[in-house]
Length: 548
Image 1: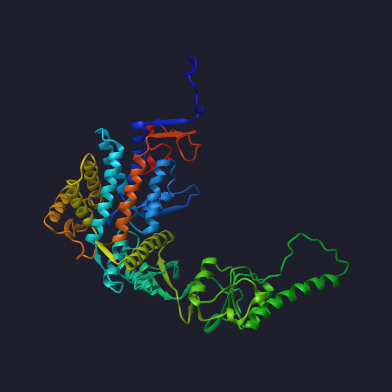
Image 2: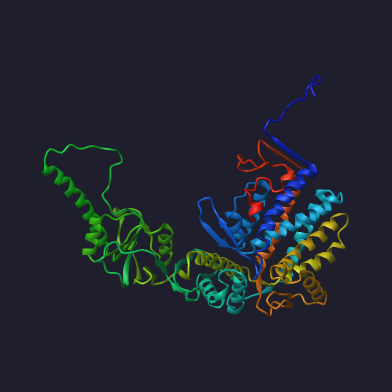
């Protein structure tokens, strides 16, 4: 107040939400995101159909894909999406679990806040629980050898179960493991390094997923530029080119006045001569095959065909980079500097039915997974499932640790956390117990999504773990508690550690906020009509609440 008049320090459109209202607003927004993907968790999880503003349809149950495709217009909700993206980048799988745990942590934290427990006590308790839980994950984990093909297959199958790849998971898991082993090298210190940059995925429609296969080398989805070119070479000198085989154009606009047809012919002859010189440079180097990222002039195509050289134009940059790994050849950026040393020897074979070139180097450093699906939507979801499986298998090879799946590790860690909570003093003890309750969300949701009685199964699970069976998890197909390690339901320890850490940090980040000040609408877009008041629940989440 200033001389009886209020002092205005914020603009007319500004919004401010404080204290408990801010906490409720943030928690409800974050939980809304988490609950939107919960139904996709597990072998019996459901799919989501996502239609973007362009009308493109995506059908998936991959957590990070769902959250990235959703039109989320809320700053707190976007923080939860970052949890899924981080989980995908670091571990390759477990995105739905990480987001679901974050949402459950916030739900249980809200109950503690309503009991007048200060957010800092909850945050400290969550940090203690997260650190202890990750230590226990390492203790529960089983060491696995990179050559243990059977265990790696189980990891791949567990990752693919419930996704588009599940129907043919036996065949696909074998392909995934062979693909990862094909790009694994042993470092000087004895550790194993998986270079997924040397692994490429090519998708085709019109066949069943079970017909997918693994190729040594690269598969290039391109056609020869000229029908008279040879297409098969047992041992060819291959040139990778990032320079157009076209007439060089002037950097500035020019105009030329022509007085006679002879002068015009000289210009045309000069262009032809330029193209002839470029083709001669390629032929003189000894190249039999050219993969060019840029364009190739029609006349140059004729000359190359005449010389018996196979040429492919507009090769994708990613394909050219992959060919560099497969063949061990450099990518030439200037034809004038081309020499025989820039070529690599490899076999090139044309598959006319698939319209693909198969390229294999003498010392191949790359493999290609050729995935088939009956339709575009099927093959897209298959590719997402295979990519997750590749990531978790490569993580298992590098990390060397696995865990029993089916919710077994969550119940075991929750049991140990409750014992640990007895040693924690103060109100933080309640937060540690709330953390343990949150981890048990995973087996609960697995049971719910399978149409089973979640309460009864959770009671059975707890009893099994109290009796010392730390591998006891859910068999959602039989609806009973089994030893999931023996059943082949295996997960990677690194993904579980990352999920726990990401969920805890995201929950703590949200809990630490007690004041939201917005220059306008409480949304990230800033132009929506949906207000950001706490009563709005999800705020401006792009209409997600009704859609999901």
